[in-house]
Amino acid sequence: MDQFSPYLMALTFLGLSLALMNFLQVYTARIKISYTILLLGLGAILHAIGVPLPWPDPLWDFHTAKIITEIIVIVSLMTAGLKIGTFYDWEHWKKPLSLVIITMPLFMIGIFVISYYLLDLNGPVSLLLAAVLAPTDPVLASEIQLEDEQSIDSRNTGLRYILTAEAGINDGIAFPFVFLAILWSKAGNFYDIDFTEYFGYYIIFKILGGILIGGVIGVVFSKWIYAHHHKNQKLILKGFLALVLTFFAYGAAELCSTYGFLSVFAAGVTLQYYRPKQDQRKKQNRNILTFVAESEKLLTTLWAIFFGGALLSGILSYTDWYGIMASLVIILILRPLLGYLGVVWYDLKESKKWAIGFFGIKGIGSFFYLSFALMEGSFADYDQLFGIVSYVVLFSILIHGLTSIRVVNYFNN
Image (cartoon, rainbow, N blue to C red; front, side):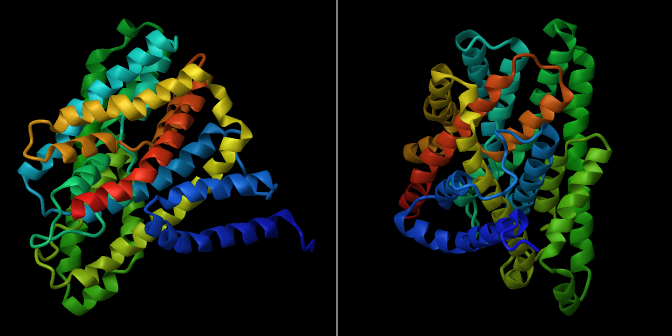
């Protein structure tokens, strides 16, 4: 066997990179930045020195990119759902829902206007860009989300909760707009779309169906778990339970032609339904959250390394200075203003309202939606989307990664 075979070198460098992840969290916490920033740099270095990993060149094929990002997002959604649980009432849910109902549509309109009128992209492509950049990413936003599962006597109802719930909800609600862009690309004329089918099937049926399927799965397994004696629950509540239920909830929803993202989030939330409302058995239940959260972190690390390599392989060259400026406007102006507007009337400090608006982090989910849409649709002249989305995600990682920990610490103090 060749001692310098690409396979062995890949194993060596990937193993080292994943081991470094645990140490990076310690060091980046001290200097108050996101460890994802350093992972991007690590990926760029590994690519530059020619480590034989399956780098995107500068893109993976759509199918590969879709599967990779899909798995990462659903694991992250399960993590978010488990952290929230069933310990929040309607008064709490109204705040993140406002970001979905008010902020997200206005945000998409703003991006569409920029894309169509300033970047001169065609209608379907402009709508697709708006849809893929609309949701707050549940993966890269994890550092400013809830740190642990909640309970009645120790639940966070502020910044961390709102951003966690928003990311869980809107990563499924964005899908109808992705499908609208796909339908437009196939119809040619926007007014040739069958809007009766669109509202009935793509919005009402697929949204409600996804929530229902995930909710039922979560409640049934929750009741089944806590119907057992305390000692047997320890055997059932193994770490991989949440991970396998993630795939079950997603697969079941997609097989029923509903939205799997919403199903997974709903399953994570309702899986906590029969958990004792107080903290006395919290440590035991924590195993399932810890395992799925660590799985999410592992997958995110791998993605960040490969994205760092993609930045050097030419993915940013798909757009020009106009696309770069548009990306900055989206991150620094559109989302903060419209995010603030979504929570302006709630009883929160002004600084916290602006923080909620500012931290509309973009990331892995955007690449999933983009890959999915380009596989399913008939888009023309879409190349610039890769550059714009990559710049938006890169700016989000850098800007939010340099500020998020400091902002959260400020509110904690």
